[in-house]
Amino acid sequence: MPEIEIRKVTANIGAQVLGVDVSGPLDEETVAVLREALNVHKALVFDDVNLDDETHQAFAARFGGLTTAHPTVPAVDGTPNVLPVDSERGRANHWHTDVTFVLNPPQVTTLRSITVPPYGGETLIANSAAAYRNLPEPLRALADTLWAEHTNDYDYAVPDEDVDEEKAAQRAQFTAVKYRTVHPVVRVHPLTGERGLFIGGFAQRIVGLSVGESRKVLDLLQAYVTRPENVLRRRWSPNQLVVFDNRITQHYAIDNYDGLPRRLHRVTVAGDVPVGIEGKESYSIEGDASHYTEVYAEVA
Image (cartoon, rainbow, N blue to C red; front, side, top):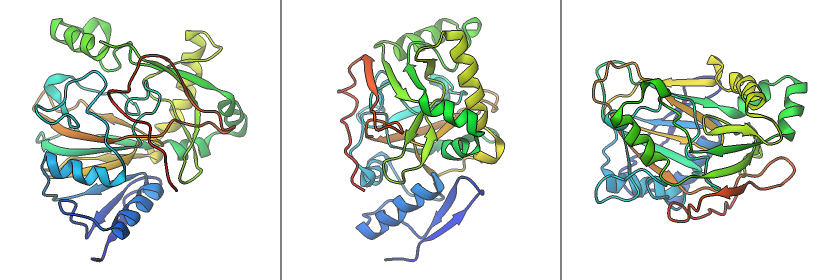
């Protein structure tokens, strides 16, 4: 096995990986090293990769079965597992964890740079386990008891007053099928046992609280997720691959590039049903996502 180097990027999140050719077949030992690095660092960066959609999917599949591109948004033509993250199709400049409105959101998200603006367009990735550890004891005790309803039935990127005809069509597509799922606010990671705040933009209401009360509680908890010391800010370069653990992170694509072209391709790995600290699983209220993802049974 070639020498693999894992270079820590910040104290709480992120590492650069060197010595791995992600475009070719990977042996089990290499995959185990990458999985452990992902468990520890939550986000991994691979520079100067030589990937196309086919080899990108092959790499992601080493972490588990793939989801289709998205429950409601179309895939790249001819490639049902690849989602184009394209500035021309909308901008997700809002903190979120991918697809938490379904029963079993992806466990791993992989993003590959296709078109990079000359400035701006960074992706922020936050460590929600560090956020949980940062909570004062009274807040942690409260969070441990809470469950939140996640839904796609709103637009998490564009305020109503900014919605033109094109954006309205994008919103209609995103919400073409309505999903509502209840997840624990504190999720236990199935591999590491870490507890993380499992909230983000799709979490709209705390079970048992009003919408207004929910917003105040969610905003309070979210402030710990997005503390600067818990965040990796990654400036995209050409031919770059970023991999993050969607079970214990949030991310945000910054809209700071003056409308210039920006395109990434996203491939996600099917995940398990989230579990809270008492062992209770998430449950679906509305929406069938079986066309999007199978339930992944984690093997430690």
